[in-house]
Image 1 (cartoon, rainbow, N blue to C red):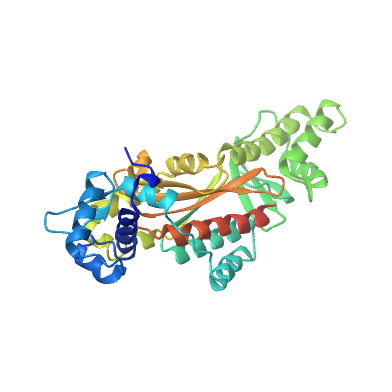
Image 2: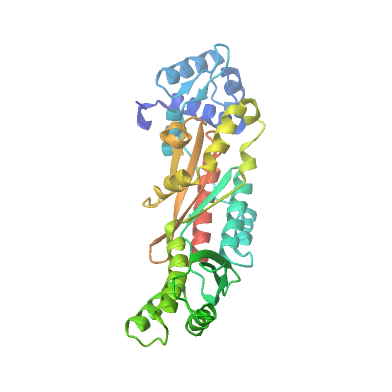
Amino acid sequence: MTPAFPELSDRARDVFRMVVQSFLDSGMPVGSKTIARASGLNLSPASIRGVMQDLEEAGLLAAPHTSAGRMPTESGLRLFVDGMMHAVAPSEQERATIHAGASARGPVEEAIAATTAALSGLSACAGLVLVPKREPRMRQFGFVPLGTDRAIAVLVGEDGSVENRVIDLPPGLMPGALDVAANFLNTRASGATLSDVTRRIAAEIAAERAELDAATAKLIERGIAVMSEDGARRPVLIVRGQANLIDPAAAADLDRVRGLLDELEGKEEIARLLDSARDGAAARIFIGSENKLFALSGSSVIAQPVRALDGAVVGVVGVIGPTRLNYARVVPMVDFTAATLARLLA
């Protein structure tokens, strides 16, 4: 069990902080002589070794090899992150880079992806964003025949997005029914969301105000239903910057990196992990085996909910990287990205 922060003496706390910070900078175990030279603690290497031994017995440090220095354990990193870390706000240039990503032209998904890529580049991690699938306002709806029993429903949004779905045609369609259905939708759909159109048309058909035969009405219902169901099935997960995970320190542990990249392919599991951070008031940090998904690859995840002005959660943003990532710098960066995305998704 990790000791609480107050149980460490001032000397132990200072040595521990130096070990952790050195490890986060270099990714390498730290020796007592290195701490003695760099710390300004006015302690001999022998005294520092004694303190490091005590910290190892407390489960906060570990020695990967007999003759090597010490490095923090996952429990040690948790103690550092929760009680000793001094956050560093993003610089003006870093904030400008994130803002530039959010200002990308085109569909909002492209701006979200650009913002995720910016976060990835600045943090040297893989960037992750989980957002609900947005309903575009409709510009045009059409049907393209695929033989006698199937067709492609085509939705063009005002933002330029295009979505295609294959549907089964109801029996008994009259010649030209696809055009009739498309015209019927387009006279009611322009500038409206799919859910608005669904409610409007359902009301018309129920009230028998729509001049449609039963088969054409069924075609319209199927066309808008397949779009609505697919959009609501799962949120959109955007991952950018996987290449950042293959750094010089990781090159010596290719099995770990390969496992991590494999885990990133399992997007449903990652989406579930990010979704678990939705209820947090601030960033949630998963260190190594604290999260089962990345236990084998020894990775850390920082995830923070994206909240609208009314406090509603509209997404989750985060990063994944090695456990030795720069938490003090990256946590505020994720927080700033969440605030930027909140304005984008409002």
